[in-house]
Each structure stands twice: as C-alpha cells, then as structure tokens.
Image (cartoon, rainbow, N blue to C red; front, side):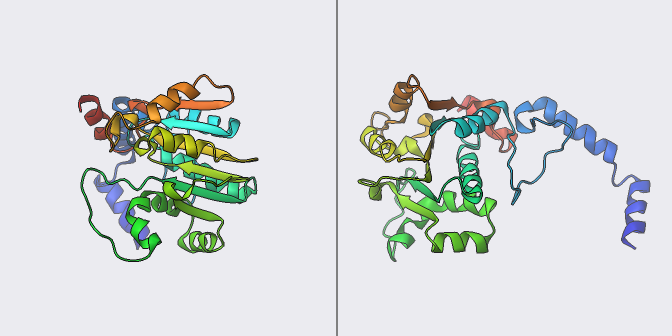
Length: 254
C-alpha cells in the first residue's frame, strides 16, 4: 500500500526528486558555507549519534585538525559556527577511544543581559540553566542512558569556572565554553589547569561578551597565545556558520 501511494505521488508530480536536488543546488550556490562537505558525493545528513562528525566548512575542518594536533586550542568565532559542538564531539570521541579518562566541561555562570533572580535547589540545580548548552551538545552525541551513566561514574563532569581553581586536570579533555564572559584573570587560571596527556579547547566570541568589553579577557589572551608554538588559535568567520543562513546575513549587518 505504501509503495503504491508513493508511486502515485511521484507520477502525479507531488514528489519530484529532480526538483528537490535543483533546490538544494540553489541553496549551496547562495550559501556555500552552509552545506560544504569534504566529500561532495555524500549528502549532508543529521549527525545525531553518528560516531564521526564531519566538518561543514573549511574553518570547521581547520578547527578539528587543530584539536587533533594541539593540546591547547582557542576557537574564536561568531554564533552558529559549531565551536562548542565540535569541541564536545571531539571530547566524546577521545573518551570513547580511551585517549582520555574523563571529560571536563566548564562555563561561566553569567546572565545574558537580564537577571533570572533566585534559583531554588542544590548547586547543580542552580547552575543547570547556565550549563544547558553543554548538556544539549552532549545529548546530541550520546544517548540519554549513556550520558546519564557516564556522568554518574564521574567520567563526564560539568563544572562552573568558580570551582576550577587549584585543580590539575590530567588525562582529560577540557572544554571551556563562552570564554568571552571570562575575565583575563579567570582565563589565565583556567588555562593553567592543563595537566599531562590532556587537551583543552577554549571557545568564545569576543564580539558577544555579556561583561563590560574592557573586562573580557578572551581577545587579549588569544592574541598573545597566537604566537606561542604548539597552541592552535582558530578564528572562524561568517562563512563557517552552519545554522540557518539568515544567521550569517544578520551578523553581517548587526
């Protein structure tokens, strides 16, 4: 029954694969950064639970290569360029391969321009709204059951920046997200947590800080570290945005 109805739709013109491919070609021509793939023969697809994530832009390809090569990587760029997602995806990949023994994700608890007031509950519940983007990225790479088990075992830790001082993170993959909301002193403290056999990826957009511009230390630190050997500083651009094409258009004028 399903096959006959599909044939009727195709014969009646309701579904035209050639027309669909033409529309996809137009999108690729108008927005080349949104559907780029190293293998043009393979169509873009939903990467949920796919073991190996492929870059969707040349900037993303540079970022992934830099993470594989360096122990310290600074990923800077506008919203929607996949900085956090790729960092978390690489962290999960290395954990599953046994290259690291744990994942540590950290993010500043800074409100985005408005106060959300008092939050009830324990520390984890109070911090949950700020750390939600990291949970979302992890959920996109791991099944809910697997994620819950890894966090219960302590193999995945999500910690606020205020609790990182004094720690040495050995044999770990560390992701510092939204680093534009860190001061110079906070970032300096975080970068010096790096231990043996560890990788740290710091992501952020210096143009979208929720602090006073003079308080954010991301731009200054990344400029200084760019000249240090064995540290990768990747600057993503508007053409690397993989969200809705309008995101790139809006950021060009805002």
